[in-house]
Length: 65
Image (cartoon, rainbow, N blue to C red; front, side):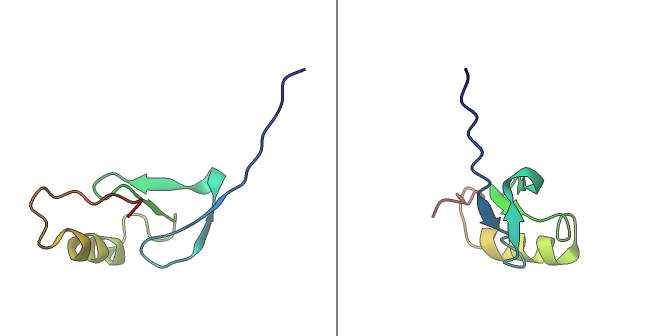
């Protein structure tokens, strides 16, 4: 019988710090960090991405740092 592992990890949105369930999560492609559905595509998200990318030579931020 196969094992079913359901971790249901909680992540935090990098824009508003809200908890995101594993099933409802998406990553921002430019900074590779989790973003919630409320912040996805918003002006707040664009502003936060600009803050993170400001001053970086290659334009990429790893979400694990």
